[in-house]
Image 1 (cartoon, helix red, strand yellow):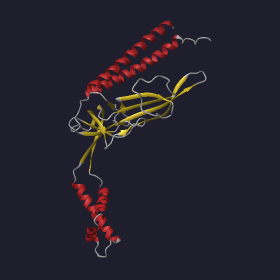
Image 2 (cartoon, rainbow, N blue to C red):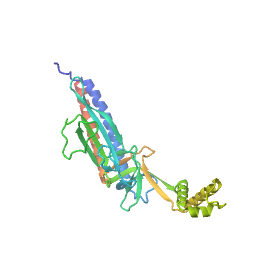
Image 3 (cartoon, rainbow, N blue to C red):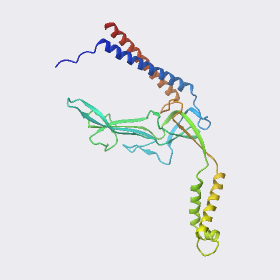
Amino acid sequence: MSAAPFPSYPAIAVAAGAAALLALFRFLVRVRRDRLVADTPTARIRSAAQGYVKLTGRALPAGPAPTAAPLTSRPCVWWSYEIEQEQKDSRGNSRWRTVENGTSVELFALVDDDDARCLVGPVSAEVSPNVRNVWYGTTPRPVGPPRDSIPLPHSGDWRYTESLLGVGARLCVMGELRSRSELGDASAAALAKLHEWKQNQRSLLARFDLDHDGRLSDAEWEAARAAAAREARTETLESPIERVSVISQPTNGEPFLIAPFSPAALEKRERLFAALYFVLGLACVVLCAWAIRHA
């Protein structure tokens, strides 16, 4: 069996040159991100201005209970998963084919040390999970959680990957903060008030049974609905205005980052990636020059 031919020097030069340009582009992107992360001050949620911000805090469920991870049912605030199946061709070469995947889009809360909170909409965010597990099995869906030990390769034809942001994880979030004020739903309040009045039929009849026949006619029911709507609108207008803040994907193309790091650690990560791309680009330039010299 003959060995595969060695690529020609011109082909090596072209490939190395293209890789060098790509690494240079990624280096410039990371340098810009590093400057953006370093130059954006960390704000407090309670006093943060509208627009692009950097916030820190604990990740908590937006509702009364955390969401459940789809593969293991572990409580979390964000999840991402992938199920792959190993396939082999006629030559015995194997590859992993993605059969199923998904990413959470549910809002979760970010609560800082002052107990101020905002909501985080993770759609289109670059999320760095604080928990990531890869394990293997023999069924299309895992029959149990991942083992604590390191999984052995080829211990099954199915590979499961699950990434999570755990409840209580300390996060640094960079994105666009938007706030709005909510007065509540007057229609829902009117229906709730009518339901409350129905619980006391004697009081309801005494107030709206104008002909005293012991029941409410259509016209009298309409009067009761109108009274409930008036009282609900009054109570809604007099209730405290709730300010809801959500940090989500920026509209101006700035990076939307969610990471379980401190601001200093996030800056360090961006600098590290920039340095790695620079070294990779330099190595590709050297390889390109070597191939041109021998061409």
